[in-house]
Image 1 (cartoon, rainbow, N blue to C red):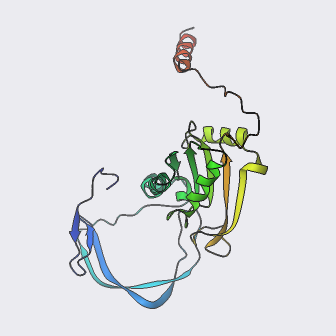
Image 2 (cartoon, helix red, strand yellow):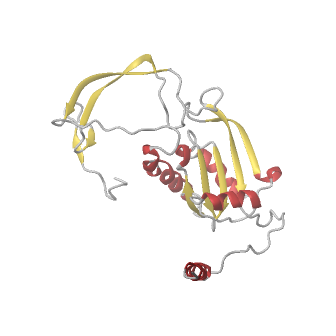
Image 3 (tube, rainbow, N blue to C red):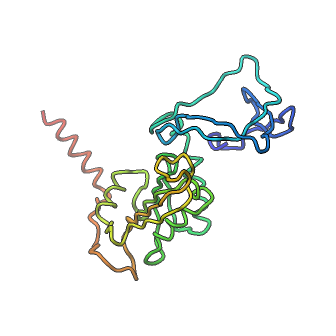
Length: 246
């Protein structure tokens, strides 16, 4: 639906009557059997690592429906970037952006593309000192963030969170580790996170790379040296002159 820009058409599964995407190549219907577990895995995961074997629920398949000569669709995944990484935005950036904006309309953009949301870069305006850290803590406790968000980088509203050189500049110029790095121990994360110990539990980190505002007055942040609006035009003209010099 997100890729189409409109709701996807729905059909009815023949056995269970559940909604399924219209035009599916294969529809598998069954029952999750109560109190049954079997070892599953290891599998290559989106984190770029193989997961271990885990006791997982057992599904009893009761009916398989398929189109004539069905196409088996699959995606290669592993260490970014792989095929699935280009489709991950609607499942990571969009939920976090909506959930954060419901309480913090100052949030401008959310980049959760890398490792599917385990690390998130958030661009936000600020109401008052300490506001960015509050946004970071909320990101970790949204419905999506509870299981996925383990690291948050906060940048100002004029920094593009999808432009990594801008993000690295903000981190190098605006972060004082003593005041701007917060580590919170023993929070939940999905079990596939390789650094979790034990599985499902991790420390989470907030890096506040925003400019301090009152009453958080510290550092020496004068007027930033930014390009003038006509800079790109002049750069293009100079490049043209150099190219034609011969």
